[in-house]
Image (tube, rainbow, N blue to C red):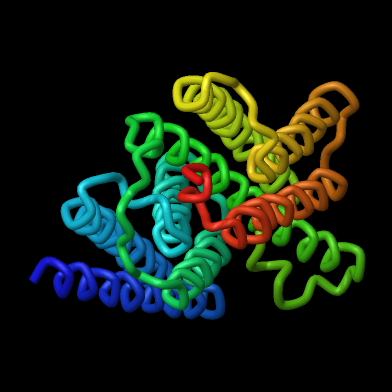
Length: 276
């Protein structure tokens, strides 16, 4: 019964997120403020349903559902949804929600193709460090995904300005200044979460295996990701990297995040591989 309810929650998540995407695209085209309000409300509903879906899997599994490809990507989408909604609560960036909603939809579609099986948790992973470490790391990825969306929007808007035709996208995208500030905010928040994720991961490794570092490929690529974003932070606030260069770096950094999540972690068996 609980499995069926969990599956229904996931279908509802896919449906509401798709509807939110459609509404945001309609708003992007029509610029009707009422459509935007409804789109944001539907995305909020999607965030609530994502929370219920994750909670239902927790009740079935008995541990934080964040160890398989399906679970981690759903959690990634959930974190991106709430990171955007929290960001939107404080800041207004024109049509940002359209790009974020499409990215969230792509993440959930990717999760829908992965196995939804709930596997027994290996003893070494039965620790409160699991939700702390994995959770904060995926929240870091969520903020980097927002920076990625902002970077794409920046490049689109810059192209419009260079063409001097002020075409279709120009009136529908924020100013370059607003997008650069968005990049700065998301970069700082994501880097703070990523640093916390690496620290908690090291403490968990020390508790489980008696060492702070094991040279596991996931650990190595997490550290590479951290250095890439450290470089961005350093260059932005000391060398003045802004504008197009910062946008390109945000996109490149997110590509490394995706590779770390899919290219390294899951061919090795996901989080469960740490228990081998």
